[in-house]
Image 1 (cartoon, rainbow, N blue to C red):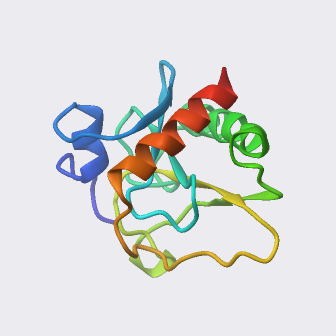
Image 2 (tube, one colour):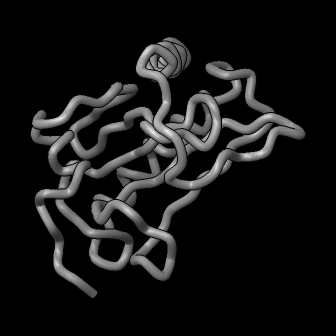
Length: 140
C-alpha cells in the first residue's frame, strides 16, 4: 500500500485550499457534495484526520465517519424523497478508489433510477448548492 499523500483533493478541501459545498461538520468528520454525482444529492463523508482508506484509518475515526454516514442516510428521504440509500466505500485502485483520502459515498436512490457513471460528469454548481441546502435543512 502506498503512503498518504497530503496533496489529494480532500486534504486540500479540509485545509480550505479548494472550495466544496459543505453539508455537515463535527469535530472528526465533514460531509460535502460530490462534484461528480452518480445521483442527485450524492454526498461524501470524509474524516478530518489523514488516512488513505479503510486499510489505515484508526478505528475511532472510522466509527466517527460511519456515525456521520448514518446521519445522512437517515436524512436522505426527507432531503430528497429517496426510496433508499446506496453507501459505497472504495479501497486502492483495484478496489475502485480514485481519491486517496478515506471517504464514503452516500447516494439518495429512487426506484427505477440508475446511477450515473462513477467519476463521470461534473455537476452544475447551482445544483450542488441547492442539494447541499436540502441536506442541511433535513439534518436540522
